[in-house]
Length: 270
Image (cartoon, rainbow, N blue to C red; front, side):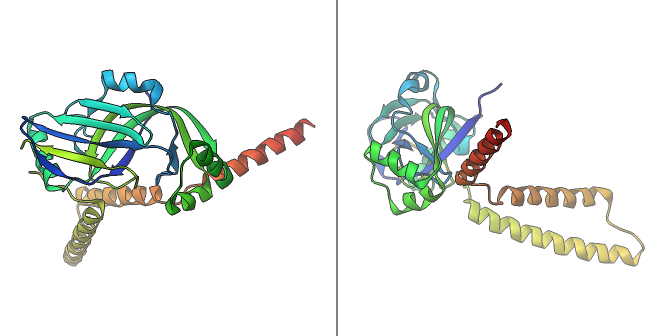
């Protein structure tokens, strides 16, 4: 069975630096330890240590937005420190690399993401469990951390990192890329901008379809099966995306159900 890959996306600040080297280099934290990210997960202390050798030997810098078909290069600096996983990489002078280099230098791209495979994890079912972990890790949580801890967390205790990529989506608020060096486009929209553009396009499409349907109805005709199929596909995809946004059961809910199931099984055995 293929390994299930996870992605975590991290904002960074861009500082452009002209240097007397050929090519472009960026450096920053691909992962940060101990805080709770928006996915309700924690990168635990020591979670990278046992598999750094794998990342150094096999890891790569993926293309924009995790496009593995257009990789940017290989990491030339990997360091596991107290804050997190520091990664530096040089961008290869491909067509895609030149586009990304310009966007990095201009500050258009401000985020970084890493793809990893979970190897070991533990569940922190309650805020008390999370607080105990933070105390043992000597970590001072932020207000956002404490709010997210209300639902417990999943703590990854061992992960295998496969790649790090520049991306256009927000995520963890504790990581940043510290430098961009220039050497020498495509533009990419944020999810918010894309959503508004698509909404306007769909509204325009619906109005035109309704007008066309009214005209054809006067002649006793209807829209072709092909056009109805396209509209149906748009609706189905939108319904699928909406369903994915519905609230999921929290870790606290799961922990409660797990305990109730255990008690039920114990009573049946008695």
